[in-house]
Length: 259
Image (tube, rainbow, N blue to C red; front, side, top):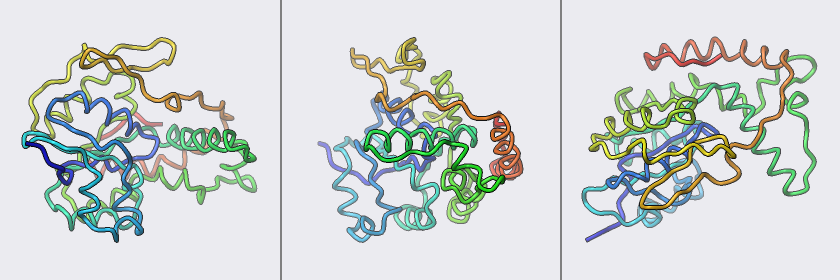
């Protein structure tokens, strides 16, 4: 009695915002099934041309009472994704998980740094990438990805604000349950995720998941220590994002506790 369904909900981003944590925590819910991998259907042309049947073939099998969710953090910053998702399903519900934009930049750098170390490629200090000729390097991709107002504008051309639920990534890591209950309400699902589904792992420094009689933590690549960043550089980043954050708060009628 199961079949593969096109997602009724997509986690559209943001990269290094907590998308994997959100997906794995939602997977606790009996009415949710999740795609195992990032599909990159709407942001990569070489996948998009394969068509909707190819997309559906990558989804898990589900029952009629279950919602299929996929997550690809690259969608939020993709110029093509909003229109393409709208063309597939104009009434779809979208989940966007965001965190402090400066923290997100540092986390973005950290992921690339470790990937380069593991591949024996040369690495640069954070400050040497972020500052060029004494000024903030605003062309740095990680900084561009944190301009939430710029990207949100594209989504709001195709979707109404009540179709996009914003999850506070900073809160999700510290206290997952309230954020997940808001998602349950947004998706019109019965409340099934409980505080007993989480336990704090002292070694890792974040919450792990307990469901179906087993315990699991996010992959070891999650929660890696960030580099210590020079205070002057931090202040430059905070200052640069301040105006963009204010615009974003206005757009979504909600403020966040960001620098």
